[in-house]
Length: 221
Length: 221
Image (cartoon, rainbow over all chains, first blue to last red):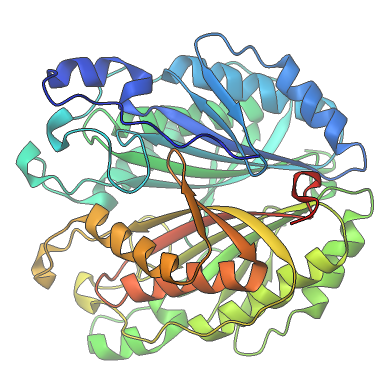
């Protein structure tokens, strides 16, 4: 079972402002893989998908991941609902979240290069009472010199990590990733918030998060 | 249980050529999360780690992922061994692979900006007789204008996908990712090969792959 191929979402004659305003046409979304380490994984995954409020989102479930398209606040709420339900099962699980904005489609962005960044406030999450450990990477893919922004992805990443640090979930620097720990909702708020905030200055920003829930290593956390 | 923080690997007085020649100091490596959807997940994961030949690699296992550092050929062999053993268990599993090169450490690359790209041939993999479906993203993070390379990450991604297409595993374009299908070993060869090849022209290149093994959706594949 495969997702349908992305359609071309932009029209040449349309003003750029319209493209940044519509989250689905701007390519604001997530791909999520929920892996539950138990024989009853099908029931837990189905239950979690049923427990997550899909309001405002386009959802498509495939064999590798579920795609969710929509605005930042709806995505954060849905991701929090979904992963909280997985955590509530008590089963050990790994959840992979791939966020993207500013480049709908795959190889050629289906947006004109001049669409520019989308300026929205980072959404506020909620606390779940569930512990998560996570590894996080963020990629500002800014190489459109025409936008007047000097490309410097490490500067943008540092700014994002400073933001996440203010939220209290940043624990350590690892090879290639930042380690986050804390309330599952706070971890997701930090990641969605940093991605949204860097996206105020850079059109195409992606982020990859691997969450570990109910790990035997977390006993007592 | 946490990986130790990355150490500073570069020394200011050292010539750049030495930095690109040593894979560990250049930051060539992977973080891998194996999620087995069965009650006996601990045995399957331990068995797979034991079955994978670690020759030439630095390995550290944490609660979220296992880090492997070393050259491209050793990484491809280890990833193939590891995931083949998971597939051989017959259990449904999701395996997340995060490749990185050219930026050891986390926020500030512990390499001088002028280290430049690392020019090695893409390694040859082996076929496993096991089917995998996967979603793949590749990020050339080239913004060092001093290197004389015009930053254009979409051009580099297109070149990488063309390479992977030649290997016969590219199936579809999805939102944010390329869908790959085929022999598990061929999928890994395509991904490691594209990442290595793009890395011949760009210092810092990362790639994220989510593999689905033994999915109930793949019956008959």
